[in-house]
Length: 192
Image 1 (tube, rainbow, N blue to C red):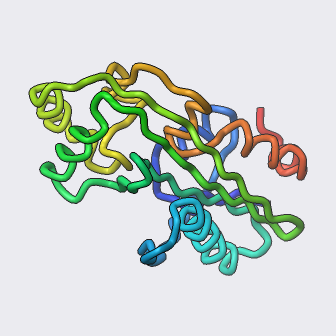
Image 2: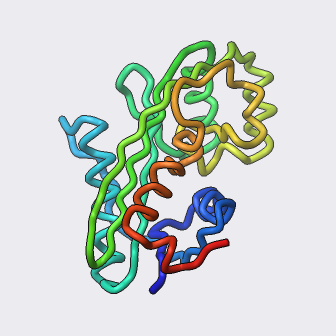
């Protein structure tokens, strides 16, 4: 039996590998449009479920893990930046404020299906335009929700977090491990 990660995120693979969970990566290709009048919670759960189902339908004997992460400031979603100007705008907006990072995760096997919704509050220090331009020049923000990587070069920008650090990275790790252990998927894989 195998565990499949329905995501191309190298950060999610790395997190699972850090705790001894080896996954096969099979990204789910879905329409990630957020519908008009759809709230963030519903949207992120819908996307995580859709990603999971697309891959699980192809590999119904496997355990599939999917996730989606969204950054919210005053209820407005900040996804991955479209370009450097968009990254600048996002970081300028987040600068000196507290925002939410929401990660939804769905884990499904032939015998169970469970979802996780984890929310962490992140406070960012006040950033100068020069700080933002220097960070953007590293290219790190370009494939990150909210245009920053808390576990990377943007770590110094974070004043405090309230909640699960790994939710901000993109996978509520301890909750995922609990579900896998409870349903005996870690025992089956003999991770050590």
